[in-house]
Image 1 (cartoon, one colour):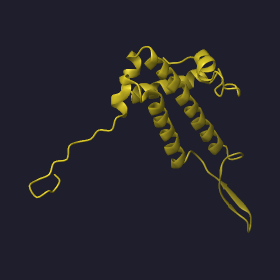
Image 2: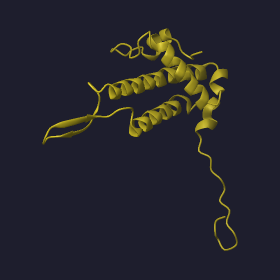
Image 3: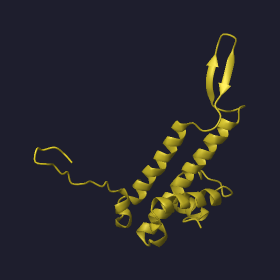
Image 4: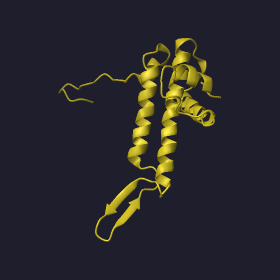
Length: 149
């Protein structure tokens, strides 16, 4: 079950945005479900048990990540449609044009980075999730000669 519904997406997450909603009401249930699964996995299930401000943040990040999943679908559709796909190479002499198929690794890395950044933006400052975003460090141990072990 999704952490946010379409009315939350339009009335709260997108409130004040004058350009309308990015995700259609038909596409939202699927995108919200996969975004919720992503958030649940990334928070190691903690998102299921939060309340108050933390729950509000979980709903917000779900909507934001659902938009990233929409961007992924759009990029995939553009790249697999050779008539309107992304041009991967062109030549001038004896004219030729090639289209990319599938989503390339740069796109995948960029989308993954966006999702991680959104998780940290919305959840990183909340005490319920602070352990997930804190870098772990270990004490450095040196031997008698000063060499690190």
